Image (cartoon, rainbow, N blue to C red; front, side):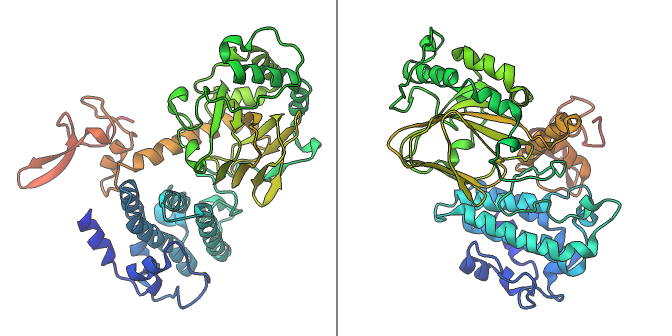
Length: 462
């Protein structure tokens, strides 16, 4: 790693902002003027098409340093990568697709990693502001270049960045979802099933209260009308982000919880679901909330009882995709509870649904002395065509898997080796795949990358 670090620091540049000492001084700040000749000029080597090929390698190295908690070096590499990705297009008018082919999501991946670096860096107090400002900066440069590189036959191929709003920054962004908005406040903007389900909210609330107070063994006993509210957080429930009760799903969710807070969940549909613990609620969901139950069945969301303890803050964050919306049915809502979606603050009312797009930056606060409880439902975005949903979700899940594999696979000149590491091909001899199967072998006076079985890595079966 030290050899690589020395090498990338010696990469030539006339851009004073890209020097290591300047970037350590500015930390997470970016140039305020995207068109300034002082920061970006045609003579800068950051604008050289030959240099921009280094961007995927810089992103890989940044991930290595981030995994090792070396935040200054990860930050330096990511900022250099941002400059390379944006300068070549803004100054030379070359599209991201022309340079990287099918990999048109490179800039979004760099920005997502940049946000992760800020979030994990303990010296950063408000990492969401870092992520939002970086997105704004990149969008300005994208807009400045779009008129010069747009293709009428395939405009998406020439998009530097698919994001259109700095508050909406999902790792996977599908342009198939049209006319997004942060909050769906009006009754006619919400799905009809939200109102149908809300008509039975007292049944759902009472079942939640029994489950919260006594656990699943008594939740399904005879329920009568009650006006009681659970006065304590159900600490016998799983912690959000613990992962064990959901087979690893949602393991990242707990990282956005501010210190000292407590956030609990009971999964009804989705990974780790226990719908029998709340049978009446499960039956109502199957009867009315089909889009939510279906999305959970496809692995794209969940339906849970979500409880936020008193004096708890869920810090600003964004969801991983823009393929869904989220509905909260208010069950127990004390005063002084609120949520920000985008730049709008909203609240909840017991017995009513609040619908929002969680791919927008959002945060939740319970500043009261009582728990806040909602029935949380993820459901297919209504503006995503029904006949495209399964395919687009599969693409999003594959993109997430590819991002995981890229952490272990440096960009390779040999496409066959990269395909094996990314699990796109298998060995024709032992049928193994993945980066764990790649070995370095001595072949006379040279070295080569081979399969663990000794077979050469060539263009094998996909």
